[in-house]
Image (cartoon, rainbow, N blue to C red; front, top):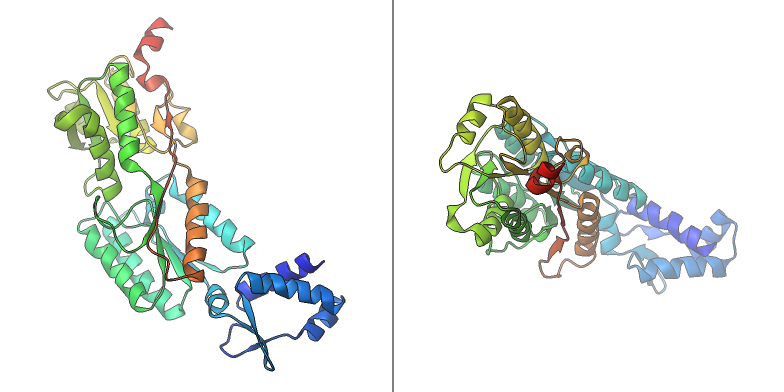
Length: 359
């Protein structure tokens, strides 16, 4: 019974109840009457909350919320510009929302959705001011990419929150290029290692001429991924900014010299659209061209042939980022931390030329 009472009180604390500075927490006698239990049961429940750093007893004055509890009692913000263009980010957002609800926290989702990257950047910076005005406890933020001067926009967003004393956990990538390191917690996958594993797989499959296909203004995580590919194939890896839905651009790509025999695409969505255009041109995957994606969402298996890709653990990223933010709120003095989660290669028939020919 005391654990159920502690859980109820914990949710009320995180929901903002008794948050006002100096507000007294209910007495043991009052709580015993409220829940219809004995005072020893309430004492055990309050011991749990004290052990979690949520309440403190001041002799002769009563029980009060700690500074950490008052911070946790406010909302947390979530800003993920990639929801507008990336297939993994809605999964991350749903999981953060579930965790916030489970822990009795209000989640303020910063909707910056727009097909125009400049508008996404503008809305993101506007959200920083909104979060500062509303005094949110902390923010989970995916840095902006695919827009000119993204680094400046990211720094402007973070500077507003820094001035307001609001901690931030970054997901997907840091705001500075590797090997530099910012002063923020980062939860992601190891992009260099992911790129290297794709490249090793392609080399083993027989690829010699590799093209790295991208959209303009790509972010630091993709730059690190390219470095991983080049650690295997050297500087001979060609980088091409390409719209995979543009039939003329795809036709130009397959006619490039030296002739490509492997295309590493920025994500699964890019690879799927590329495969559609390749089929129209009579280019057979994987016999004529290996194609790889990134993220490993459901439709990677629906492509014909199924797509070789890197599995990004979306839910685990959300869970780790949420836990990192809670830890940061509990102890702001913690040093900046990097957490790279496993992202295994999933080899499928889009890079299996021998097996395809045998079938």
